[in-house]
Length: 450
Image (cartoon, rainbow, N blue to C red; front, side, top):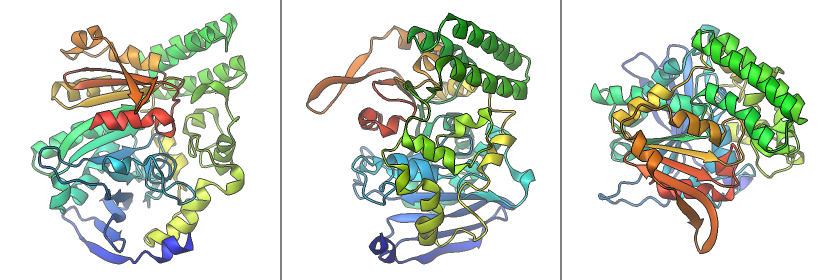
């Protein structure tokens, strides 16, 4: 570890005032393969980003090398921490090379979004975002500052890849970025949007939980009826625009499901919550208020294989990583404001974003949806339900197509299924839970996406 950090030579790449009055500061490592920094997206609101250039990059004018912007969920979970070190980045939580890093297929851009998440921070609590659209506006500002000054990046298509609540950020950002591109404020090629186990339609997901668990014998008829009553209440609250009430009822439903199922894991319905040592480590982090409505954000360490005895992600990010980056203010701790991010977004948490998916499809944007088979919180059943609500003109043909099985290499065991029509693609990933990129079949999605 010491060798890794001491071999990195840092120098200031750029420091200056930009047209919007904000300050952007960034650093590079010695060979330029990594760059990171802050963009002041609004006065006193600072967003952190980390860009990895792929050593596998191939310059091919017929198939330009892509860039993946990874958006974590929560809201309030750190892409720079979780997506990077726990899921798809070049190094794992031991700072050892990850064999299945997505760098093999693309450059990777991690962002701590919205402001207040991870290393991102605000100097005034009034600056936390309250809607997905506000978060998208900040992200668009960040993309403008990163891409407009780098002609090399402008030649690579950007794919916005999201996990969980990040899917809502992804579709609102996709539309915001398109508008900025049309207005010539953003020099970027949008390659597509990928929604991994994404919280696009909360109503459809909460209605799926009871039936799934009843069919699996995880809850009985009494538990099913209790869940249906609360789900119907949530539906009515959403219809009436009572979104904070709906968020509270969602919390109530999770508690009923947990009690009726003897604490099923919402991220893998085949196991009990907390049975994984990393889930216990997550709870130890305590980055979110100890309320049931924050259970959704308790995936901060997701489902990596390391033991709690080996330390936690917070210690890594506030220790050696913060030392390496040299740019994180002393008074900023990783995830120190994350709980506030969720609190300020409570009014938007249960709002659906199906219309935004429709708009992207209508504009010809490539939309890829992928779902883990054993996820409960953003179940495949719920995802299929909201997909059927799309008004996109190609939906009928998409639904009528048969699925194609997917395999890995010479292994002829079925790892998933795939369906595509025009610019809509769907992947069913077998054996995977909420954190698809943590499972052996996750590479299928990336291999077929580009």
